[in-house]
Image (tube, rainbow over all chains, first blue to last red; front, side, top):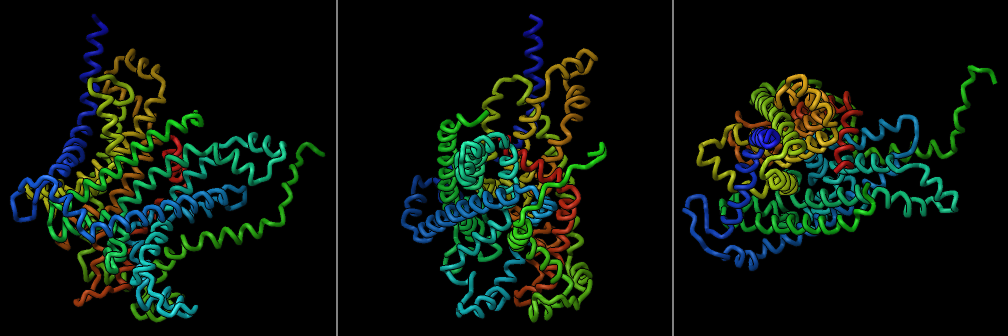
Length: 294
Length: 285
């Protein structure tokens, strides 16, 4: 009897404690998410009233060459960014894991772009990479006669990937570093006594021990890559000739430049589907990794 | 072998110097752009273009005074500060109360609500920008800081904050709460006087994320803010242009220094806590 009174009070108080945040999340995240899925089924422009059109937007997407191009750009950008980011982060973390006087300063240096405002970071590179800017002229002196990294459709996307990795890789590096430091040295010592080479120790002791972190970081980085917008918008605006127009840039253009809300919502829905699939995949794969987790 | 004798330091392997050289080379691409930004902010437009890497700082602080004299930069700075001053404490408070409720109290719908919080952490905010925009437009709140502040609080960063707080409260021993209750504290009292003071490190992490999220926010201001005087700093940085749309790079870089400096200084002063808390939030997941 008394306990049910207490339980009821706890339920009421718990609800009230969570309510302000939950209400906000409902209003600003979940309802708009439902709305965007519904809007993707409408023709809705800035001045028109919404009209229900079924899957017409999606049919149009399937035919739209710009959209198809943005799918490809997003795929290349995401795969390139994630591969480069994780590889560099792991190499940096392993390098910065040495015991050396002043190593903390080097760790801070790698990390400092993470706290730089992304617009400021992008603007620095925009200057350095402008047509007659120092980097392109430098490359021209080296013999790449038409070097123009951001205005060449072949190099623009790769250049953006590198700029974004330099900006963000410090965060993953620090996370890997702390995972590496959590690996008990006895385990590596034992493997070494068994005659394992440094590479074998790394491959068969260190990597498996940090694999849960690797995996988590992998997923967060993939989802992060899908939504990178600011550096692209500041540096290339999606150009040249659509070479850096990712899904999110295409959505922004359709929605906030052309005010085709229904069509832009369909693009958002496609992106949402991609994020959802990746997250579900993670839950599946995570179970396979549970063995390593404590 | 006297008692005070200090153990001999381990012999320095010969590759130590090589390692230092490698470390310096590896760090260059991360710090050079930032150092270059500082250097160039003290140069004239001609200096930046003519000899971008020379150390001749011919403009002194002229660019900085120009940024404030010729543009509503002071106003934009205040806008960014105001946004930060509201969104950061509110994020801390709401994530602490929600995190506490998720960790410690049973109420109907709790688990569903928590799974939704996890989802909100994963879903990129950019996906829901269009319905948000239409709603704020109908409420006549575009071109104000209201949507900017609200969308910072209820962003993926906000959801992450709730998650971090929950993970933290789960680890605190229940006996503490019971002791507080015996002393006559209600739920709010236990939360306020026992739980919150024990949560300073996590609250600091939440604050760091919220500050970076607020100070560097570009996407939503780009959508909502049109008037120069209403803009926040990340947008303002792109506004130093001549009548033909060309960029005044000397001013842009001076303004970039002013925007980056507070966060860089805060980072340099508290880098240990900073890096450790960020690392912990990544490995605890």
